Image (cartoon, rainbow, N blue to C red):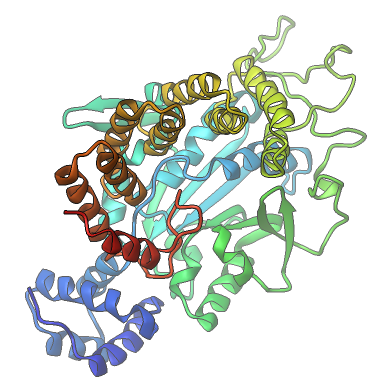
Length: 503
């Protein structure tokens, strides 16, 4: 392997890479830059001096592709943020349909920084699920990334089970074909809904690369802005704002919402989420949504599933439900109901949380398009029951959640904690091993497994589990708070493991 790059060269290389790609590596990220560039040097069969010289002049596309391939993280999975997709379904898309800004029935999405394609394909799956509501609408989904290797994988549409870990079982069965080696191929009609292209967000003209000359309704730019410094972020946002239709949407990652400060955008707060709409601020309704996006005199209207029209005319047409029994009052979107249940849970009001979650699950059972928050509701229901010590119910709902997302390692981890509370250590060990099988990088699962093995007087196995956890912790930022650790940082957990001195 190539030797470490000297600090003074890392400083110069960081500056040059920012100029050519927009990727920003401040000093605290030089360790990551060093590792990535060593791979680049090996990939190109060159040395650091030649790479530096190329970047000082006019680097070829081959060199820039090698750099972006190694310095961007393409780790993602299908339906990664179900909260967003529920908001998109219940609020944003229905707002576009209720208040169209075009003369034609057209909706354009752009996934900017699509990595290996899971995000735009998730969009396509949601659109397909909403076919009854969106029939006769022309839907365009454009997906771009700077990383050519990621784009190549996206266009093939073949994914490992790791990309499916947040995907409901019914969605996997409907939209994916199993392949040898525990891989899955996405359905051809979903793949055909997405158009991929390579785009460096530092380019001046996005429209040429995107081959899109109409205004865009929704831009997803999630976990992309974090790669840029402040001036480049501003330039990217300014260029994106010019592409978005009036009252269109910019969606960023949760940690990036604060980067969007352009006057062209107005923040719109949803329960537990903040997105930006192009246009001046609007009066906000009591539930945090923009009042002008709500149908007149009600909450969001009820739309019929695909109902056959018996009268003459186009048999594909749908109609709104007008039955008095169904239209007596507004129905609260499932996302809002879930957030209310989550608020109850966070306040320790587990009884009301359980009551609301059971309603959500019942609605999902009667709704063909209720797949998004179903598993989340079951998981929170399991936690709520566990907190009132109804462990049998907690276990039952956790196992039902596993049945809906069999490849999700976090649910197995939750099940293991329920078993621990019920003093069923062997079952807890089994669940932890399944969690690690699905996610070998799940640090807290390795640590908890080691603790239980120690409890079972298995010092050799415990030492191995703790060593696995320590190895994984070396790849983390010391100040990073670990998932499922109750606020513990990577450095603190590493210190804890080292202090145990397991023999």
